[in-house]
Amino acid sequence: MKTKLLTALLLGSSVLGFAGVASAADVTLNIESWRNDDLGIWKDKLIPAFEAKNPGIKVVFAPSSPTEYDAALGAKLAAGSAGDLITCRPFDKSLELYKKGNLADLTKLPGMENFSDVAKSAWTTDDGAATFCVPMASVIHGFIYNKEAFEKLGLKVPETRDEFFAALDKIKADGTYIPMAMGTKDLWEAATMGYQNIGPNYWKGEEGRLALIKGEQKLTDKDWVEPFAELAKWKPYLGDGFEAQTYPDSQNLFTLGRAAIYPAGSWEIGLFNTQAQFKMGAFPPPVGKAGDTCYISDHTDIGIGLNAASKNADAAKTFLSWVASPEFASIYANALPGFFSLNSTAVKMEDPLAQEFVSWREKCKPTIRSTYQVLSRGTPNLENETWVESANVINGTDTPEVAAEKLQKGLDGWYKPAK
Image (cartoon, rainbow, N blue to C red; front, top):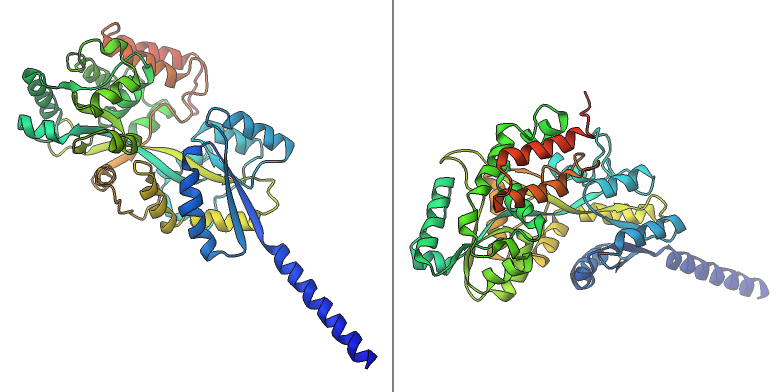
């Protein structure tokens, strides 16, 4: 009897022991991010979808303030207290983390085959040997327009530059609307929504961008000067006082219905949907002539990587493979219209304006902003200098040729292309 009782007690403790092991096997992954605006989306949509299929893994989205993220993350990594998963900024900041050994190599992660080289470019080493973050989303450049204004003035959506300027002329002649809402006070606006928006059609997207990095092209070449020449032509259409107009001013002019066209990034969609009381449409940067190949800036914006010091690497990789899946792409892109999946599987957007932007991928070749990879690591910083010169060209204080010469001289001062 005592033997039976002892056996029962031993079996019981054994079962309890296994239960304890099973419970201990549950893993909690913590995500570091600057996107505190997305807390509700992660909590209500993304994390429940993942956990439903992976019951042994719990996920916590723990964002920092956007302005404090880089410093906070650096301090946590140094102290060994950073989360298992690290939201990645594009290009150099994340590359620096990888070089320091803070981010793991994810080149062979299942799911990485779902992304093109352009999609992975923001999180790939210069030699292309390693990719260290899963691409999550990009933003696309183009033009948003007031459909009611176009209907009232009998305008068709422009496809060529001649049609674009003809539309601007007609809007200006009517006088009801400012033809185009953009200012030059916040310098980045002129470059990001101006030069980097229309430029890819001139330098042929990735062809020109990579040639510039290799030293096979210069910013003084025709394909890089001509976008400045087009920007100079925008001046008469921007309305009175555009030189003192800030980025929020431009947003307000458009959403209040005072301007007909807005040179845009797709990140505006969510805000504009809540503020504009009129129907909106979008069109890609017009090409030189009908039938020309079109190029769009489909700029890699956000990714997610694995903390190389994570004690939960296997579970984190399971999560990252899910982030690389079409399921994640669909949920994320529709929860944040204007932040588009970089997954090769097309995502049907529920928001019509977002769907218009993303549809351009089917007919135009994608590229990223020309200044973001390699070329802004030195001093002067090419990205910041392009802001200045884009504004100067629109304001008329520099000619396109002078602007290009200044940029190339600055780049030559520190950058020596690898041969």
